[in-house]
Length: 496
Ligand code: NAP
Image (cartoon, rainbow, N blue to C red; front, side, top):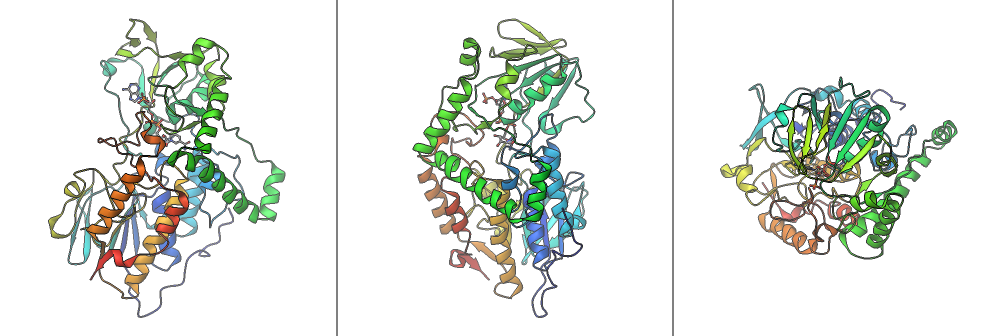
């Protein structure tokens, strides 16, 4: 990746400017880009607390067979740090995690990360945040930034008898690296993006793979091109090619998929037709029917795979639509009384979505707790801040456009916005700042009003919807997101 020592780090901030102490929680792609921005600006009094033993967040915890990002890697990288060495159009998990680690090292963020350390509580008082770590230690800072991710805490299904299973049970987001699957009979429960990704690689090594499907998914094909040695040479000789890929993929994803998500029209219909065309490749009529969803494509997060349909038609693969009754020592018993004999059960049952920094507890000004602030569900000011929580910001906070775009691109926009506030603080423009309640309320009302046209509300269950059935994502275009966060809109904040 051509990492030059110190090359990316900004000059120390000029005298007369204040150096803030900044604490970031989480070193996934959001925390890393926040750290990179701070370091580049010369704000080096930074600590990132990370509960895992390495960087990457999602890309550290999820290590199941077939793990891949279904956003093209050139669009999943940071736009200002194009890589010329992506192996495929859609790279595997380890390669993506390595990119983020390389970035953390290049900007000297890596050495500012304290691993195996969970932040359990944060309290605000006298212009400072005091964070409490899992080991009881306390540290204070001028700015606290949560970059804790969205799909973090694995959801385990409440299946009768799961504990009595004699084989191995493993969740996709807590994969056991030592698990030997060669020649085993493996069940995959769940067929979201994760469950679907697993099937093809498992069919290559297991004697039997059984996909337990509760609700069929629409699947759009994404042929995964391998970049040739010549292609890499070209990219190295002309680095703008990588940037060109970035903006091309961004255009396609934002204009084709992004638009279809927020509004009905040609793009939604096109995606639906593409999915139907893909489904038609399944030859067996009964299997095709079993795989046919009864809701609009993209209502659930669209699954992207060119491998799943061929894989599920292999002789050692089976799709089970019958509901699960219970699990016993020998396997899974479905409601029709049939025992599916198994050695391993892989749970691809998703996450407790949209919990953000929870279960960490927080107390802002005037004793306002996070539980009180979020009693009606997570809400914030333009995805990045919260009234009552001064000098606190979030990367990938509530209603970030997670369903529509590349998360790296979102984190880039948000981290730049947050950095602008820290620069203002450093320049002495304020001591503390928090968004106004009215501005936050207006943002949330506008957002809810715009949800009605989104595909998420066309009649399906998905992790996008909260307990009240309100989607937790962004109901506008990517361009509006970037424009909304271009300026600080300081008038919508109260500063001291
Ligand atoms: P998910 O989309 O929430 O899917 C969970 C699956 O488990 C669903 O099929 C669900 O069925 C099923 N399920 C849950 N509880 C169950 C139970 N008790 N019994 C039977 N089935 C049960 O989770 P995911 O597949 O891990 O994906 C989550 C998100 O992560 C994706 O939407 C995507 O945003 C992201 N992701 C991205 C990539 C990528 O390549 N970028 C890869 C993987 C994941 P129902 O549909 O009936 O609820």
